[in-house]
Length: 525
Image (tube, rainbow, N blue to C red):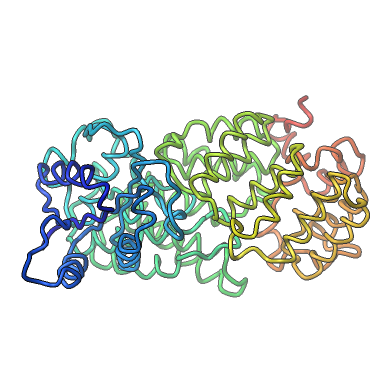
C-alpha cells in the first residue's frame, strides 16, 4: 500500500501527476487512480488504498470542490487524522474543509523551494512516522529555522491541515507510535483557539492523545509542552469547578517539559496563559517578555505578550508584535483575529481592512472570524456592510445565536439611522439578560451609539458586581475579567469622560501605567 493517497478531480490530472512525481522522487510511494486495476471494482480499490495510506493529500480546485468523490475522500481522511490539503486555484473550499488550514500553491511553478510545498513535505514526513524520506521531500529545509517551525496549537501553529512539522533540532528521536500520537494531538490542539475562552474545540481529544505521547516518549519536551498547552486551553473554557484540576495538571506538564528544556516554548506559553492578567498587568508583561526573549520568533509567545499589551491599551506595541509573525506561513483563525484587533486598535485601518478580507477568504464561516468582521465593520464607519453580512443567512456560521444577530442588527440599524438608538440599546439589553458573557460587547455597542451611561452601568456590573447589572460579574471573578475592550475603538467616546478615568483608576490600571512608565495609546495622543 502507498504512503500517500492523492485525491483530485479528473480535470486536474496533469497537476496530480506532477505532484506524484515530486513525492516519489523524494522516496514516498503514491497512489492515485492512474493505478486502478482493470479486474477489480474501482470503489473497492479506492477504499482500500484510502484506508491504508499514511497521508491523504487533497488537491483543491474548482473542479475538486464540486466533486462528491473528492469530498468523500477528504472527509474520511479528516475523521482519521490523515488529511493534508493544498489549493491550486482561487475556488472556495467546501465546508467544513474551509475551516481547516490549507497550503497555498495557487501560484506554484513546481519548485521544491516554495513555502507551500515545504509545508506539505514536512507534514507528509510527520504522518509517515519519520523525517521526510529523501532530499526531494526535504528540499531547502535549511530555509526553515527548525527551532521555530512548530508553533504549538491553540493560538499559534504553522500548519497544513492534519500536519504540523514535529521535528526540532534538539528534539530526541521518538518511536513512530509516539510521533503519530504527538502529531494527532497537535492537530487536535490547533483546531482550538486558545485565546477564545468560549471555545472548547477539541482540547479533550488533544489531552488524551498527548498524555499517551508523553507515556511513550517521556523524554520529549515537545510532547510535555504540548500537553501543558492543551490543559491551559481546556482550562480557559472549563467550568469554574474544573479549573483547579486542569491547572494543576497543566503546570505539572509544563514543569516536566522545562526540566528537559528550560526554554521549551509551549510550556512557557501554557504557564503564561494559566496566569490571569487582570490585576497582574506588570508581572504578566514582564513574565511574557522573559518567555519571549528565550524564543523570540515563537508565534504563541508573540501573541501572549501582545494580548497583555492590548489589555493595558498599548495597541501600537501589540501591533508591532503581531507584525513580526509571517502570517502567510502562520495560518490559524484565532491568531489572525488577534492581529486584526491589534491593527484596528492601533488605528491602522488600511492594514486591518486587508487582514479582514484575507481572513474571511480563508475562513468564511469560522465563528470568531465572522464576529470580528461584523464588529470591525460596525464600528469603523461601515455599519451598512455589517448589516448586509448579518442578514446573509447562507454565509452565517451555524453556531451564531439568533439573539446576537438581533442585537448586532439593531446596533447596525441605529448607526445607519434606520431605528432610534434608544431602541437599539434596549435590544442589546434584552440580549445581555440571557447572555451575561456578552457584557463587554454590549458595553461597546452602547458607547458606539452614544449612550455612555448605559455603557458605564454595564461596566460597573462586570468589573465590580454593582448596580442593575451586578449579575454580569464573571463567576470566576478576576480569572475571567478582561480590559482590552475598554481601549478598542468602539469605546472612543468614553475616553474623555470623567467616569472612564475613575473606572480605570478603580480597576488598578492607572497604578500599572505609573509603575511601568508607559501610557496607553488613548492618553498618549
